[in-house]
Amino acid sequence: MNFENKRVLITGASRGVGRACARMFAEHGAHVAVHYRHNRKVAEETLASLSGTSHMLLQADIRDAAAVRRMVDSVVEAFGRIDVLVNSAGIYELHPIRSLGYEDWQKVWDRTLQTNLVGAANVSFCVVQQMLRQGGGRIVNISSRGAFRGEPEAPAYGASKAGLNAFGQSLAKALAPQGIYVFTVAPGFVETDMSAEALAGPLGDEFRRESPMGRAAKPEEVARTVVFLASEGSEYLTGCIVDINGASYLRT
Image (cartoon, rainbow, N blue to C red):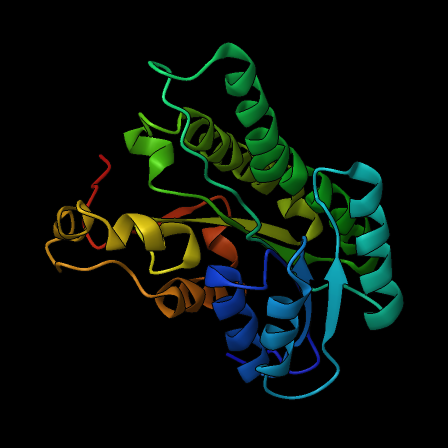
């Protein structure tokens, strides 16, 4: 896989799966735009860890449509184009319907959908306009196993990821004639900051046993699949949703 002189924008790249993707694309020669929302120190650490040169750092709250447009414009101005977009930014908040108040319920749903689904849609819209001008590109969305098996304690998260799956497949059908290919990966538990508390808690061993491999995924395992999908030769996989869950949940 050779990404020499390719330009890659990764949202939520300061940590977790996004960080692993940034590192792996850079290792394969890409120029990477590292997006973060609020933790500049961690984002700078990610940037400093990338192989090669000519990478860049971007701050934006992707819930803000105007900020999204400014972010994408900044990447295009600096890089000249965007060959690959990875929509990795996401949040997960517990909000059980049995015990949460109505106002808090609404707030969590709004934050989650605006970040995980609407934000990704707006970033994709702005990037696609550039990809149409340049004659092609690739988008990889980071979804979740929760889109299929349900998230009883975090239903907005499961719904947002199910929406992201449908969004990616819709774009795949709409944009393939223009040489823009869209893919989705759906991990289960991954050893990231987002899942650290759950995996370290009293149910951690139970969560790990959900996979017959007896462990959660490593961020690098997800990143390898993302990089593969963004590579030349994967075009006919457009519209696919790739499960990366260690056989913890098998779809039929």
